[in-house]
Length: 151
Image (tube, rainbow, N blue to C red):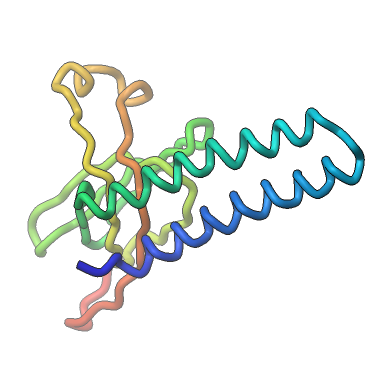
């Protein structure tokens, strides 16, 4: 199975950002003979590598799901980088999701989200919405309407 394009783009951005920060920090650390900056650059490279490997393993093991629908409602929770969204699927079913990440969405547009599958325990769903775990967005794409119907 081929990695979906939105996930490829996000993975590439992640790898490029990690490499850029690590290389730039190392070069500046060597030029300034600053050992602290070298250690910090190494730490960024190590932590970023762990994150990139986890992202790739999530794809390889198929631990992600695809959810698509028309965005009916969005509420942004700025302090926690979260979005509470309501999607309409298959003309009748509505799904409410709490998503983790920074992105801009338009109400009335059709989206496909690629979400990391995580086990959410029933005890966690009893918590207030602010404390509930959010689904991690591995990528998303805006889709065009095939039937010509738009909200």
